[in-house]
Image (tube, rainbow, N blue to C red):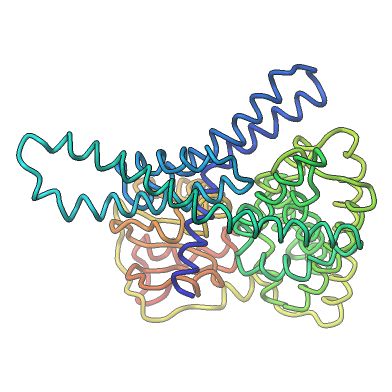
Length: 447
């Protein structure tokens, strides 16, 4: 399980780094279908989707496993995979790139001291090219048939669910996985390749809407604003970040603090998915992040009404159920709990020129937003010498003075020997009092 989790996380990182390319391919499809009737735009979109992106994924996977040398071998391996034109070229390119990168790094490390002087460059070039082509050939002949069968099996399963009208109930799986921070893998690792396959036959895909729908999160945050009046100012900013910014992680802590709200999120998501299915709505490419803005950009104008209806219905159903759940028994707000909670045993010291790293699954969504907000807070506090960064959980550098992550996400971190500050919500600045106190050297113990 440990290695499987590591493989899934690496694949998610590779996909995440390619998201701008996916969005570009989708935009080209939108422009050609909605605005410009130009035959070159679809061709450019196809080149990006079925050639550039798989090869780039092979390069990124190879780089992650073997540095620059691994990236070159991964590019060659991915090129060999693309020649087969498999439906699952993106997934297989990432696998082939990882294998080539890993073997190139480990192989060169073992034999570099045995290469005769003056032959280093010749041998390295031949080794990298041969290894890249070998990895591509192995993937082509061994993994392509398996991947094609698996993709066909999953595609037939989804087609069966759509035909029988049960695709909306996939929310029973999607929503629970989202709130435990598997949202990026669900969207990028599972729905994205299957959605691209569906696009080939239908022109658009409902799969791009199943995880990115901001309606359930919007409904939960709106319910908090209605039930807890003292949280309305905080909820307003969270609503904007979640629905327009597309950072869904801001509502996860509220569900985790009252797990009954998960039922409201699932019900609202099912209602929204049902609207998408009945109206035949879909996107022309992946929407990332899951913002109403990116969703509407990636949609054909004939689907706009159906998509907006689905989003608003899911938000309304979730909000109504959440209000009923929370009004029955009001509990302490997440913010109140966060301020009251305090980890013991972390040494306090004055931090000058400190490097603080905000951490999330892939180092892009919530951590990027939180680091930007925290930089503004540091300026207000006069702490101009503190450096703030955002990274994925497996790329925390050794020079970090402290890391910051959401409380529930911290459970997935292991082997971290840095001071770790946990908050219930990365984008809620009221939860960083202990971190600011630590940076200024105040107190004896605390976060």
